[in-house]
Image (cartoon, rainbow, N blue to C red; front, top):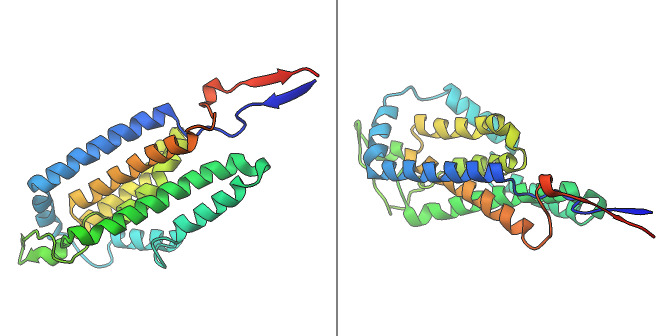
Length: 232
C-alpha cells in the first residue's frame, strides 16, 4: 500500500485572516478619507506641540530600521525574503516553507515598492515642512514625499502576510506596525492619511497575493485537506 498526501503545502489563504484584513483595509481607507477631509491638519497641529528629538518613538523606529535593514535600503528585506522563498520553493521537500516565505516577500516588497513609487506623483509636504509658525499649510504636488508613508508600507507590508499565515498571533504581529504608524504621526513626520493609506495598501496586497498564489494550485484550507490512499 502506498500513501499519498494531497496538498502537503498549506494554502496561504485563511478565511478568518482575510475577513480581518478586509475590515482593517476598509477602516484605514475611511480614516485616510477623514484625514484628507481635514482631520490631518488638526492632528498635525497637535503633533507640532509634542517633544522632538530622541523620543521613544524616534529611538524605537531607528532600532527597528536597524534590525530589518531598512536603514541600509528600503528594499533589502523584501529582496532577501523573495530570494529565500524562491530557492526553497524550487526544492520539493522544502516547498511547504518556501511558499509562505515567498508570499511574505511578495507582499513586503510590493507594499514597499508601491508606497515609495507613489510619493513623488503626489508630492505632499511633510507636516514639519508645512508647519508655518504653528499653522499647518498642507501642500501637494510640490516635489515632497509625505504621501503615502514609506515606513508604514514597509512594516505593515511585513506583518500583514504574517497575520494571514498565523491569524492566532494577530495581536502580537500588530504591535510593531501599529507602533511605527503612531510613531510617524507623533514625530511630526507624516499625516494621519499618509499612514492609514499605506496600511490599507499593505492589507489589500496581503489579500491579493494570497489569492494569486493559491489560484490554480489545488491548495485547500487546512480544514479541508485530505489524505488519499492508493492500493497497489
